[in-house]
Length: 81
Length: 81
DNA sequence: TTAATCCGATCCTATTTTGGGATAATCCCG
DNA sequence: CGGGATTATCCCAAAATAGGATCGGATTAA
Image 1: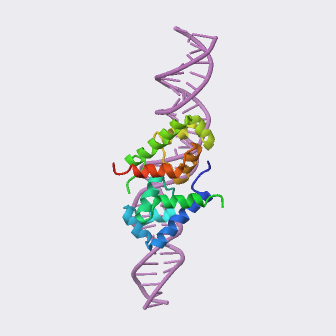
Image 2 (image 1 turned 120 degrees about the vertical axis):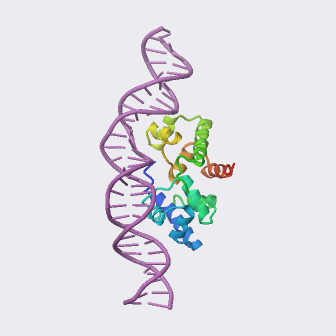
Image 3 (image 1 turned 120 degrees about the horizontal axis):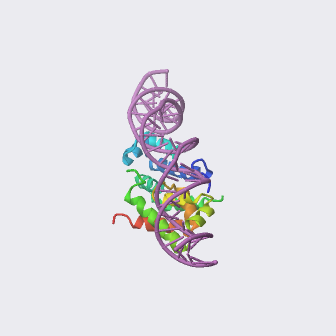
């Protein structure tokens, strides 16, 4: 297992979250507010400056109105391609 | 969103991974080897000393021969109790 | 009993990452 | 352009992490 943060894998995960946020029409600041975090928190994980753990991922997916399981499924499906 | 690491949420996630490892009859050292990490890596995340990000979670589930989606589903279902 | 393993938890500390307010840079629309 | 909205970056003290070494308990062998 390589370091996650700078991996292509991780970049895909982030891209998925960013795309989901865009589709939901939610701004970083608004998402951050839902999460009770500063906007820089969102900017950092979206920019690959900070790792997201599993629990955080779930909280973010929910805040975006997305189904965490579907997101993860899409992520897994996108492997190897 | 509270800090993940010491949360009850996180404890449940870890418990799930530990139980899965036990059922699979795999030792920390063996799992660590599959992950190309030292045994202390496994001991730490199982002991709640270290956060697991999504990519790591997937790698661990696979190394344990478990379906990551099923694991996550069980985790999510166990919420709110 | 003593020794040898095995297993997992803990130690140590240099290195890396993170928190979050402030500020800078971009974007976008009129 | 103007300038508000949105996102990215800065700063750096504090917190988290890496991973080899070591510890202690449990089990087994000699």
